[in-house]
Image 1 (cartoon, each protein chain N blue to C red):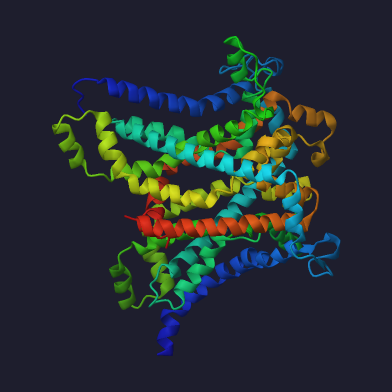
Image 2: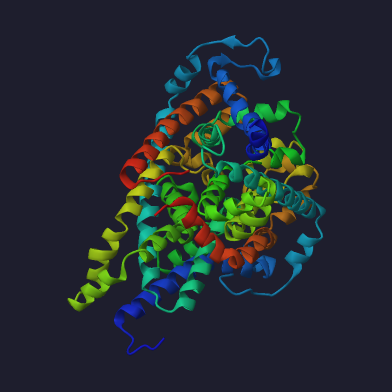
Length: 291
Length: 300
């Protein structure tokens, strides 16, 4: 692109864009710097954006903590299990619901059953009691089953399926294909951008989830990563981490180690989302705004 | 005839069964638990135990609590501030992004500004507590260097709500600008051409073409956000608040959490939850109806 001259507006706009980027990065850069710094300097508040007294001690210690790895393992388990369950269910529900009323009787009724759950809920207490009654407490299923049907994602995929040309389905039907075949061979390959979007949302949702881990897991051994981080970084509630001794706990709350935990807790998502950027940008717009 | 039904439709119904089962179990069964709101619920007796029915006593109890009014006002104030700020900032950012002509730079900027959206509130709270710390946090170090006294942001009732709003805007502005940017790109370029020929400056073009052009989307987003007026952001508030800022920062969800999970006052907590769900339901329904009428918006 050839620029004849650089106008004032271009400079202003670029400057604002740069400021916006900095605003997003600064807190992160600061925490990274603290995590690589000398602990005494960090506690004394002497670190801004560059590590001082560069050391890997914080990460070294963190990566040797079983408590941390246990929580990481629970999170990975939940992301894989929950993510696949979400994807499978979203596809299984969005496909039939994308059909017209003629092809699927009671379609409107079904859609309302799912959509209504986005409008009204029983609240925290009944939800908690139900999961307790089902005997799911302290099990990975408590983290995975209640949110197994992501209705918002279903609607995004549903709208996407509806935009697929009907001719493809019709010709497949004429050739004698059953619905499963049509879904797998025609709709899914075409829906990859949308599937990428909803998968990203689902993975991020599971990875960042912490509250269900807090109230549904009685034993801290079963905490997913964000719940564990919550107890160490935010809550600092010694009663919940009785598996640690006082010294371990004091160390885990140390500024540089907290910083290291923050970095490790956010790194997976940060490394993944840029690659799916073009998908979720398109997927968001298609799924939510029409015309 | 029946055979054709079985081949054509039955698979579709079958596909829906797992989803329906899960939704009925985890979304509809808890709705039945709403009855707890009308009972003097003693957890030890169990869900179907002999609980005492007290009618609307739980609701009256909460309404009479001295802090309830403040909590509701906090919720509304914080939620409304967030909705307005989010809208203004996201539109402004979309306008700025639209002016970036280098595609690669634009995409790079977008990648960076999407980041906060993907971080959990635990992570962000951890960062904020450190950055806003009155003794050594980088913000206060700057304030002190400029000659002022350090401010205990997260412990001051004057500052706390604004910290909530600002951090939420920070977290969501990048991702939230996507919708507005997409709407802006849908405006007919010929309109800009005509304006340029008439000698309109870029600013005038934005005011007379871009903003009116995305009017529908703005209305839509405003209307849709009506439904979340009672939702001031539990994840965020819970991880940033402390008893010293209850006066300005306690919201309905945090109150319900303390009553229900910490104090085990199940009946009362469910009553407040029910109230919140009902009001939200009415607001969301109105919001969707308005969106349908004003902007022809249909979710499915």
